[in-house]
Amino acid sequence: MWFLRIRGAVKRGAALVVANGRTTKLDRYTAGLHYHYGTETQLVLACLNVILSENLVKPEVAARIDGLDGLWSHVALYTPGRCPS
Image (cartoon, rainbow, N blue to C red; front, side):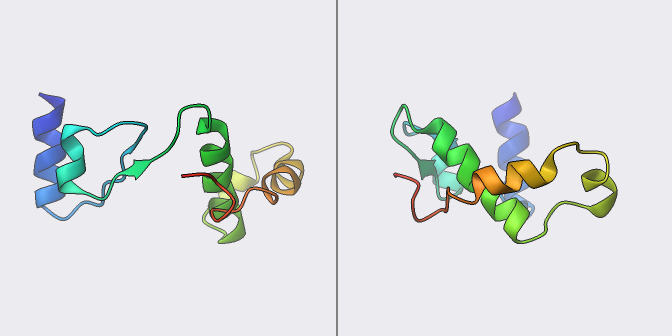
């Protein structure tokens, strides 16, 4: 049932990113983000790097997060180009 709802949303123009180490049914509706097992943490840290470096965090949300500066200094090392695929 959830597959049909996601497929319908994609057909209506929603963007979908599937991050999985293997091929799924949803890959035919979007470009899948495939990774090697054991590199999930690096993938998440690279995504956080992009979110923080492009200021995609709303200011009202950032104000409620303790240690955001420390997180930024940690994820700065994990660029999308450094993340293994």
